[in-house]
Length: 73
Image (cartoon, rainbow, N blue to C red):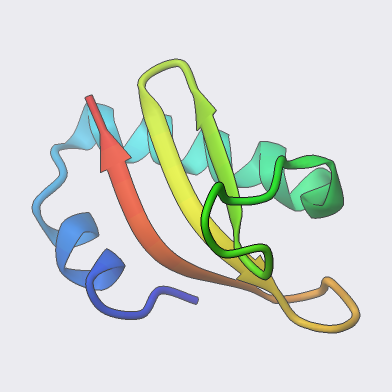
């Protein structure tokens, strides 16, 4: 699930960037707890890999990821 500003950021991505984002989201979904905590907000997780940055938090059971920020080079 994307919330603002991530929703707006995703709408501006090209096809190749969207593919990179999908791969990163699949990697995160496999084990969201394995992603390092955000530097300033411990409830958030900050995934940075291969030109993709995703800031998110997971629901209590970890079954839903709430994406708050997306950056794809």
